[in-house]
Amino acid sequence: MALKQFSTIMTKWQMHALKNNASLTKSFSKCMSSSAASKSFNVGFIGLGNMGSRMANNLIKKGHKINAFDVAPSACKEAESKGCTIYGSPEAVAQKSDFVITMLPNNDIVYDTYDEMVKNGVNSNTMFIDSSTIDPNVAKKVQQLVKSKGASFVDAPVSGGVMGAENATLTFMVGGTKAEYDTVKGLLEGMGRRITHCGDYGMGQAAKICNNMMLGISMIGVCETMNLAIRLGLDPKTFNDIINSSTGQCWSSTINNPVPGLSENAPANNDYRGGFSTALITKDLGLASGVATASNSPIPMGAIAHQIYRTLTCRGLGNKDFSYVYEFLKNEQSQN
Image (cartoon, rainbow, N blue to C red; front, side, top):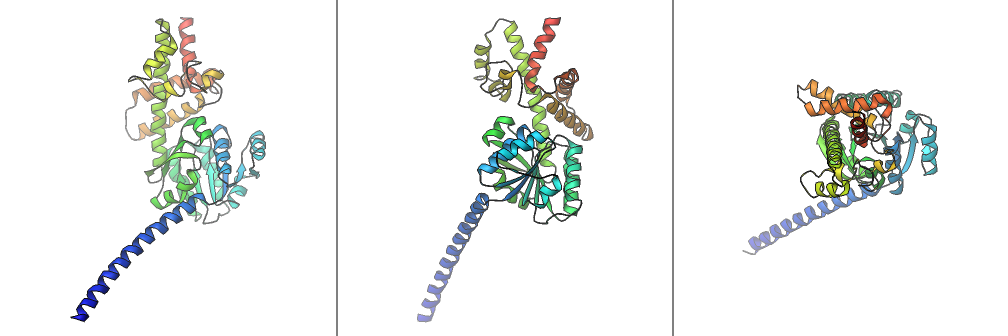
């Protein structure tokens, strides 16, 4: 009887110990994850434009050492004044970095940059992150290239614009394995508020292209609507307040309103300088058109938006913020 009681007591003790160990293991993992997120790394940053420069600055504020490169000497000089160490090539940046983030203009530049970075081999522990907006199939090709050299890659394009980059409130859309997502999440949190795993390689780019097609369409809608309302005699501020408390509310009406004076810090208040350029939204809508054709998906509104922005770009307005469509519509009406 005593032996049976002893056995029962031991069994309960073992179960209690296992429960405590599981709790301790969970707490330890959580602690390690938090530590990894706060650890300082050598981070390579390639592409120091309106977005990249601000993203790099936020990583510096988090205590990371930034190794940087850009083809523009002025961008390098500005980054150096903020605390970045400048290198003469993407390859040199990669050799010195635990993570490498690229923020580049288009498919060809992204692929050529990665080809140069890894052609002579890379550290297998280096994690490459592309935050450019490119074709999902190009992202997959870059991943295969990096993998062939023994390193890892994820596509992680961003949404949130220049203000999001400035305030570290970007949304990152990550394509890669769950393990790779977990590896980069802590670092990306130094630049963004929402880090989402979208699926396998290229799925971050797929999400970004679809999002930007919606953005281009909605901006044109806001521009048309504001122009019509003003021509009908409505006060622009009064009408915009109505939109933003009604069903027409969207990012283009609240944060980046195309009418000067209606949204604080909007490019419209600065002659449409800065922000998200017409040339870039034209490029992104071209990507949407390409993947829509490949997947046999009809995008009538996306196609019309693409043609409108192409027209602006062909007229030499590619450097203006994409909200310049409003001024374009106003000027077109005054000429008719």
